[in-house]
Length: 552
Image 1 (cartoon, rainbow, N blue to C red):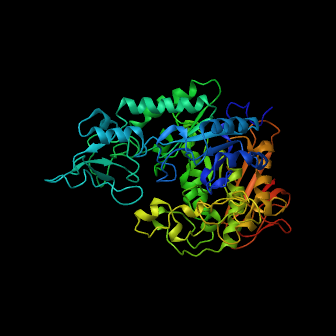
Image 2 (cartoon, rainbow, N blue to C red):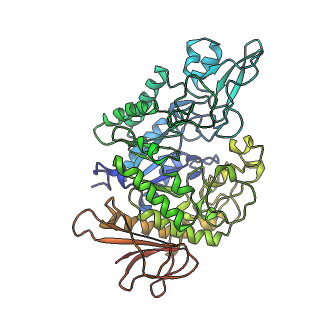
Image 3 (tube, rainbow, N blue to C red):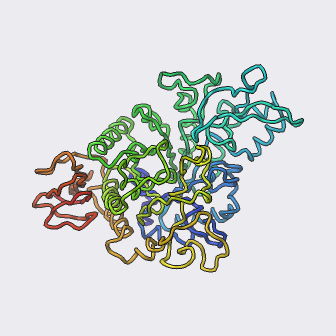
């Protein structure tokens, strides 16, 4: 039987690997990762032990925002391959027991999308403009933007158009960059098109849809400025109640397929109760848990995040998700080595020091912590290699967050530097040896020493830890249930996070995960049978920044 493929509820405890196609592997030597590169390394992902791959957008795009500015959902960007290759990749992965999740971005499209180009050409008052948010400006000459909303990427959210005669025209809304005009979800064409896009990819074998910025698409049609305070569901564009009707219709599309297809939401909300509404049985299956990912390396904070996350999911019966980073977030090896080990987009700065040895110890322990929690686990490409965040030279940065901050924010390219596959070679195996082109982002010196080749036969490497952890997670009956019970180790203080997992069936047994986030060593119980640890244990003692799984 294919691994996990026959299990209808595969998504409840799946290990999902995030591929950022541009940076995973370059198959044709042009310096950009592509689908051929992924196909060549499917065996690596099988051996790592993943159940599914989530791909960030691989669609036709001008790449103004790393592919999150889609020009055509039904075409693969030529930099990555073509539709036939995507279909082959989905099928080949499925043959290895690995499902595929594709990204859909309902909030906006590219300014090169056919709809938007036609809207610009059609002019004010046209049906074509009704699919977007075109408005006249404020002020006597219309030269003030329609609202004072702030972009997710800093700066304004409105750009003024220019008429065919060169005169200033209407403004259009973009919560992100000007190259990403927001769609009007009150328009039936927008709703119908996205349902058809879901069917397009489900028909080609995709097992899931990851929904980008899922709490943003619906806007208050009055487009008011943001008040100082507002009731839940009444913000002009965030978490509006009307969104739930959209996702119920998407769930109906997913449920119309014979085998289970899932919806995964990217939902950044501070209110756990509002977050849980998206996970009701007729809406999304799961949603990303950003709260855990952004917390500092602190026992009280992580314990609180785990508790509130599980409590939020319990009423709707949805599994939690656990993730340490993604294509937007500073990598854990670097983040956990900083004085402030939390994550905040607004706080990113060049030159922030990090103790990488400390960060690596903590990242290893964090891997076991997240791997033992009930729910699904996401692994961002390269975290299994312990890659650090790279401070990309300013002249090589491509991320619009950097430019829209006036050059203050280093942007997100530091976690998007291409993966090293071999110890040597001009691109550490990212591109073929004879590739004529430089990688789209420069590789730092010594990158090959963190490569797959350098780690695959090293029993104490980060890669070996991940492989062992994921294999144990799959095989251990105690980790298949949904429950978690907090555990207090004898003599341990508040700096230890410990919990027990017990299988759903009699005889499944119990496994305890204990993580020492304090400054002193902690002894495990004398009868503890250690199954796995993030660092060697001496006489059953858990050193600082170390995690262990054991049978009590």
